[in-house]
Length: 72
Image (cartoon, rainbow, N blue to C red; front, top):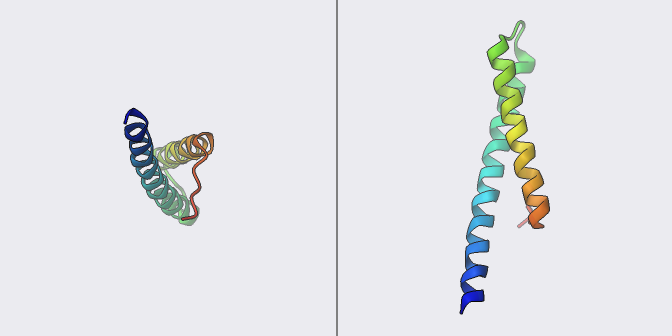
Protein backbone atom coordinates (compact mmCIF):
# COMPACT_ATOMS: atom_id res chain seq x y z
CA UNK A 1 0.00 0.00 0.00
CA UNK A 2 2.81 2.38 0.86
CA UNK A 3 4.60 1.70 -2.43
CA UNK A 4 1.47 2.45 -4.46
CA UNK A 5 1.15 5.85 -2.83
CA UNK A 6 4.83 6.55 -3.48
CA UNK A 7 4.46 5.61 -7.14
CA UNK A 8 1.32 7.75 -7.47
CA UNK A 9 3.06 10.77 -5.93
CA UNK A 10 6.07 10.30 -8.20
CA UNK A 11 3.85 10.28 -11.29
CA UNK A 12 2.00 13.37 -10.10
CA UNK A 13 5.20 15.36 -9.51
CA UNK A 14 6.72 14.13 -12.76
CA UNK A 15 3.70 15.50 -14.62
CA UNK A 16 4.06 18.83 -12.82
CA UNK A 17 7.75 18.92 -13.74
CA UNK A 18 6.98 18.27 -17.41
CA UNK A 19 4.34 21.01 -17.40
CA UNK A 20 6.73 23.52 -15.84
CA UNK A 21 9.50 22.47 -18.22
CA UNK A 22 7.31 23.10 -21.27
CA UNK A 23 6.12 26.44 -19.88
CA UNK A 24 9.65 27.69 -19.18
CA UNK A 25 10.87 26.46 -22.57
CA UNK A 26 8.20 28.49 -24.36
CA UNK A 27 8.83 31.53 -22.16
CA UNK A 28 12.60 31.34 -22.71
CA UNK A 29 12.19 31.01 -26.47
CA UNK A 30 9.86 34.02 -26.58
CA UNK A 31 12.22 36.15 -24.52
CA UNK A 32 15.23 35.02 -26.56
CA UNK A 33 13.41 35.88 -29.78
CA UNK A 34 12.48 39.30 -28.41
CA UNK A 35 16.06 39.89 -27.29
CA UNK A 36 17.39 38.98 -30.75
CA UNK A 37 14.99 41.44 -32.38
CA UNK A 38 15.87 44.32 -30.04
CA UNK A 39 18.26 46.91 -31.33
CA UNK A 40 19.48 48.04 -27.92
CA UNK A 41 18.09 45.76 -25.18
CA UNK A 42 18.09 47.05 -21.63
CA UNK A 43 20.08 45.36 -18.91
CA UNK A 44 16.86 44.26 -17.22
CA UNK A 45 15.64 42.41 -20.31
CA UNK A 46 18.98 40.64 -20.72
CA UNK A 47 18.98 39.59 -17.05
CA UNK A 48 15.40 38.36 -17.21
CA UNK A 49 16.23 36.23 -20.26
CA UNK A 50 19.24 34.73 -18.49
CA UNK A 51 17.16 33.96 -15.39
CA UNK A 52 14.52 32.21 -17.48
CA UNK A 53 17.22 30.22 -19.29
CA UNK A 54 18.76 29.18 -15.96
CA UNK A 55 15.38 27.99 -14.67
CA UNK A 56 14.79 26.00 -17.85
CA UNK A 57 18.23 24.36 -17.65
CA UNK A 58 17.69 23.54 -13.98
CA UNK A 59 14.39 21.80 -14.79
CA UNK A 60 16.06 19.91 -17.66
CA UNK A 61 18.71 18.61 -15.28
CA UNK A 62 16.06 17.60 -12.77
CA UNK A 63 14.15 15.71 -15.47
CA UNK A 64 17.35 13.97 -16.55
CA UNK A 65 18.16 13.00 -12.97
CA UNK A 66 14.65 11.57 -12.51
CA UNK A 67 14.94 9.81 -15.89
CA UNK A 68 11.77 11.36 -17.22
CA UNK A 69 11.05 11.02 -20.90
CA UNK A 70 9.63 14.20 -22.42
CA UNK A 71 8.29 12.37 -25.46
CA UNK A 72 4.90 11.03 -24.50
